[in-house]
Image (cartoon, rainbow, N blue to C red; front, side, top):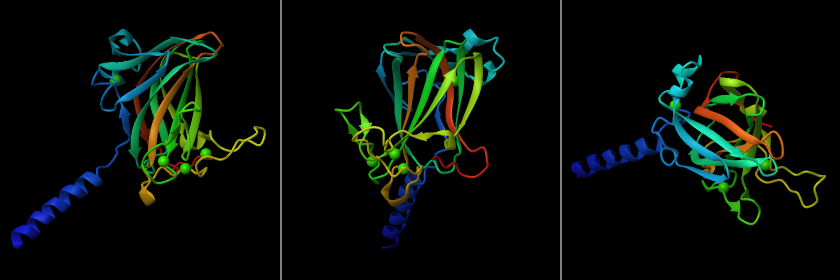
Length: 232
Ligand SMILES: [Ca+2]
Ligand SMILES: [Ca+2]
Ligand SMILES: [Ca+2]
Ligand SMILES: [Ca+2]
């Protein structure tokens, strides 16, 4: 009996350890040299995402923060849109206040980087998407921030969650438009919620037939103080 209790205690601790695995905010630094695992990114559209060795930027003041690899993104637009990439997180993001990343720009026509965050609002850890409507969420919030990349060289970008806009809220000007999700930034694990489900980048050109030419590294969530970020 004692052995059984001991075994159950050990198993209980193992389960607890797995469930209690704390998300430290890191999403990807590309140091494994790929975008297909840890985390696995899906890609869409015509953008070309390539993990490259960072020594091509050896003269950049921020080179020392890049590690061995970063992600280069290039492509030509069809009606502004070039492509994108996303990954599943399913993490409790409440301890964090900002999205932080390094972004390399190639001048005024580097393109635009839209960051999308999706939080689970129907408590089932998955993002149900409408396959007949551009994979838009059916029940969960979509938060969006558009970054215009118009500089040359590497730069640290920190975007507060408060700067993200609810991208699937009812727009009275659009017929049939309705609120999707609860309109609250609540990326926690309460009531069966998967928290922050998807993290996604969309790459856009500055002009209708322009192009995107940038690079990304050290993508993470961070806490820069000032309380927990609450987007509106
Ligand atoms: Ca790196
Ligand atoms: Ca859901
Ligand atoms: Ca919404
Ligand atoms: Ca929500």
